[in-house]
Image 1 (tube, one colour):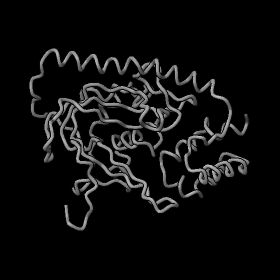
Image 2: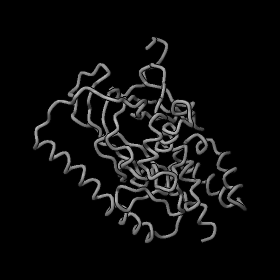
Image 3: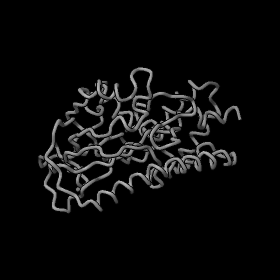
Image 4: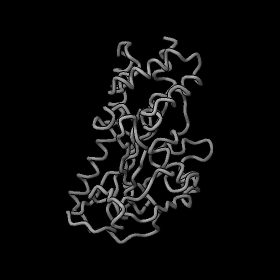
Length: 287
C-alpha cells in the first residue's frame, strides 16, 4: 500500500481462504435495529493470506444484508411480502448475487480492497453450480441460503464508499466478501470432536431461532400502531424532507424522484432501499 493511499482496513482477519460450512438467513439486533434480514455464512478458516498477529479462529461468520422487506420462516429461505424473487442490487446480498452472475465489475464502481490490492472478483464460474443448486430457472435460486454451502472462496475486505452526505460526512462501510472460488485449500487443522459438535449445535440453534424470531417480528409489525412512516430515520431534518416528499407525491414514480433529490437518502444505499420499499412508507399513502 502506497504512502499516499489511506489504510481503510479494519485490522481484523479478513483475507483468507475459507469454506462455507453453514449458510442461513436471520436477523441481527445489532444491525439496523434487527429490521434487516441478513444472509449468514459460518466459514472455516482454511488458510490465512494476510499478516495477522492475533489468534486465528477455526471459523468466522461473514454476513450479507439483504435489504428491506425480506423475512424468513425457517432460516433457509428468504421471502418477501410482495413476492420478490431477487435482492435489490444496492444491498450487499444483491451485490454478491450480481457478482456470481457476472453482472457487475468487481462489486461496483464504489468498491475497493482495503489492502490496496486491485479488486478483482471472479465468481461467475460458479453460476452453473449455483443455478443447479437453486432449482434451475423455476427454483428459489439465491433465496435458498444453502446454495452456498460447502463452497470454498478466497475472502478479502472490501471498502464500499457511498459518497458524502449533506453534513459533509463520508458514508462508507467495510465488508468481508468472497472474491474468487478456490478448488482446493490447505487441509484445516484437526478439531476436537467435542468442539465440532459444539460448533454444529451453535449454528443449528441460530438457524432454528430464525423461524421464531421472524414470527415474532411479523407479529410486532402487525401490532405496531400507525405513526411517522419514516420513524427509522434518526436525522430530524432528513425525516421532515422525506415526509414532505411523501405528502407531495401523487404517484410512486414521483415519490422516487423526490427521494433522489435528497442527498442524504440518495447517497445511502440501505436508507434508500428502505424508503423505496413499496410496502414501507409509500404504503401508508393509502392507509
